[in-house]
Length: 251
Image (cartoon, rainbow, N blue to C red; front, top):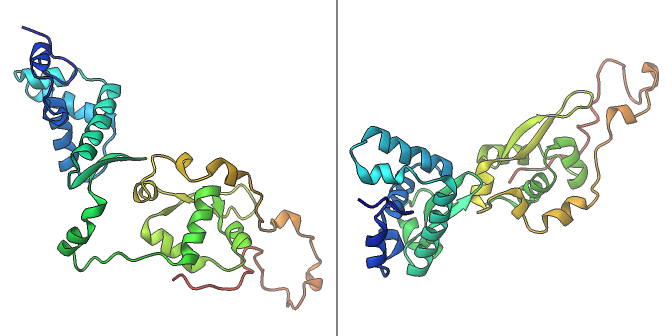
């Protein structure tokens, strides 16, 4: 009996039918089924885990045992080939890779018809101010809210809340400065939504990260005044240096 080949089929059988579409081979078909059934993107390593799980569950299934021998790099190559096959066939769906892994999506040119299935889910767009704030977070993360306001010149509380609710930014930690303010960064959904595999794929990423931007005045950089010399103060209320910008609406 011949050992299963790269795609989990006998090598002579593959050679006997070289015109067979790549997505008809067992590995391509199984990967297609896994990604179609999954409710989240899957990495090659996750696919391999399921291939091995199927072999463990059914050791008498020679095809499953053969596919379980695939390595993550082989699965990654197969996914690239499957994505290319979809493109060449001009199908109604695509296979795309993001930071979280691979997933099946509908073709962009099919959007007018697909939207008819979800009339109540009309896409809502971010305002220009929200997009500008999101861009600053994406290129300069992790970043404090105060530094965002220093760049934009306005209060970003409402905008930040909107971005958090949309799931495109997250709290990434706390800054190592007095007060330990929150730091913000982008999410896996941000990469997925903008079809990016990593932040390095942001346009002009390296160049824009080198541009010097304004930063908020740190507490340690401010002169310490005697309590009775604080302007307009009755010396009972503390004023945060991170809350000085005028307010701006989120949308």
